[in-house]
Amino acid sequence: MGVTTSAAAVICSGSKVKTLRMNIVSPEAITLCPSPFQLAALERQVFDFLGYQWAPILANFLHIIIVILGLFGTIQYRPRYIVVYAIWTAVWVTWNIFIICFYLEVGGLSKDSELLTFNISRHQSWWSENGPGCVRKEASMSGITGLDSHSYISVIGCALEYRYIEVMHSSFQILIAVSTVLRVPQGSGYWGDAVLFPGA
Image (cartoon, rainbow, N blue to C red):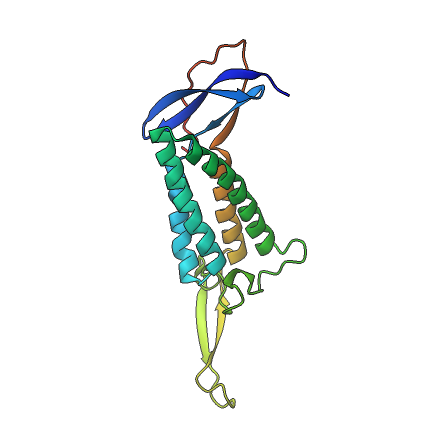
């Protein structure tokens, strides 16, 4: 078992940094600083809505709510909110690793599956048809029985394949999430105040 030591947990409140003393059982202190930059998930939420990606929409919604609670917890000194935020950070990183594996088709996963839409639609990422340089073309399927009202859609000229855009989004989210949890080495018993701006 570790020895209970006094440590300083640095928390952010807007442009100010405050120090909260707490007892922890560890040779190191974990500094948590929910960053407003984590609300970049709002941008991701918009594009997931446009692509009807229901699983990511739900995950993004939970993330935004918990980040807001985490920010509130640091301002109001609510340890329980910080604990919830810390647990969610681990879940969020795991989720984004899964998304990266999904689009890179690691471990038998397929980016063409309907997993992210809960198998209720055949929609794919919004970026699959609207990525940089992509040209979307529709061809009528008239003359084919039962498909007169349908059209064949082809996408050409994409400068970057949509799966790599999704991978970059998830990687960015992991980077922001990890930057809010910093391990501070134990010194000679004195913990000085530190100015930390994770995600900045």
